Length: 271
Image 1 (tube, helix red, strand yellow):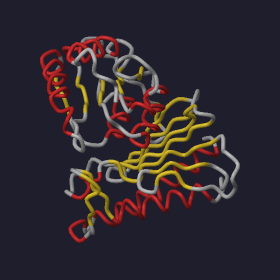
Image 2: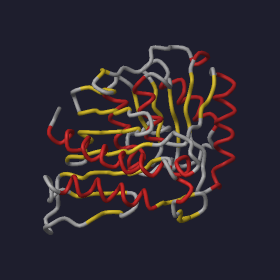
Image 3: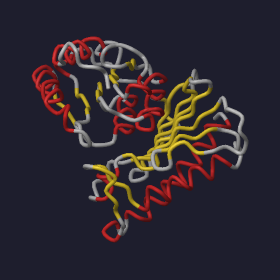
Image 4: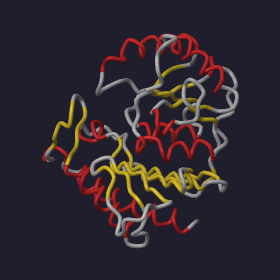
């Protein structure tokens, strides 16, 4: 395992231990509403701090982009070639309801290219890892996307708007198209884990719009390194910037994209 990935795994496990301890008594947690249907807990903050501290020790000059603290300062004013992209608890709403579908997500960019990624599910102790050009793994077992080649047989993941409901009608149109032509849709509420499930072949595809960089950085690399295809819904490759994601295996990526594009207004932007 690459040394940088080893440190990311260590950071994710530290955060996971904090999350697991808090999950035993989630009813007493202090919860703050950041905006409509968007919550943060003391656990998010403590987990993020543990991750940053773990990464900072060996890599003090690296830049950090984290969900709760934003972009954090380095020990010098020189720009860094490396940026860690962190979501300490993807699926906070699930967590505070005791619904065990949440994870820690840590991705690393080098000169704008994703090079390492970790998605850790502390509730199930499932560790998804990937390094560019070295494959993707679940608890050291090599991952491959599913082999299904017909949309009619495919199980597809998604996420619906929860902060800004202006795009709800568009999502419902997409959902109608996909529901009619696949084996089913799942909306579990943690995009990083959904992308890990595509990499593991548990989902045959996934789409969502309006995501943040920390929701998808690690998951993008997991899908790529497991043999999957991932892009914006319109076909571009600026997922980190646009927040639009379409992931699937080689057989289903284009057909699923065509379905989604038919359901979207022609003038609808990616984000």
